[in-house]
Length: 103
Image (cartoon, rainbow, N blue to C red; front, side):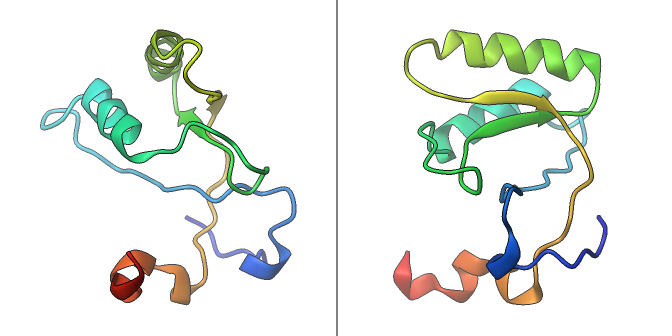
């Protein structure tokens, strides 16, 4: 994760995303994707809020593409290589927990 001058107000062509770190000896990539499918909205509304799966290697790319293909016709989900991740401002960390009354 890298600090970057991108702010919520200046997000422009960036996409809000979650960085999920997992131990593949405890949970598989497919299990992570299954959980993502339960929680994500497959209908993009803008670049900022588009739906995508980012992968870090060829094996994940293959599995993510197959996963999204099985969703055929039900979703508009990109499969893209992961690039640099920028941590959001502190007030966006644990946002749902901080705004529990709204969710």
